[in-house]
Length: 137
Image 1: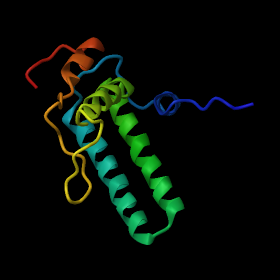
Image 2: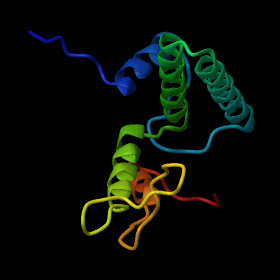
Image 3: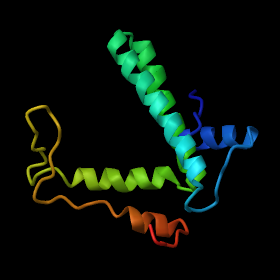
Image 4: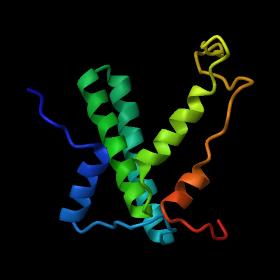
């Protein structure tokens, strides 16, 4: 029998609720101060991931990857963004990078390139579906 693992979004929401951290109900801008704080947190976690990768310890890499995701989901909550829906849109777009034969075109370093059938993600539409009204940004 398997145990249901809560989604990252649900776990991070629980943490934000228990710690009285910012959560918006629909996508909206946040204060410059809060935005700077969230960016600083993300930068710290990415730097720790880089250090872990250089250390060669897979358990440290896994921990820091999880921390990056956790902070990213928390940042999405702070902005009122349902990140799962945005990720689904990005995923669908990424799949259009494949050629008609179902194979990707790769750059020399292994990065998947945008092919002729690439369709850019419509993140604005996803956010509008979450209640966002585009302003000046």
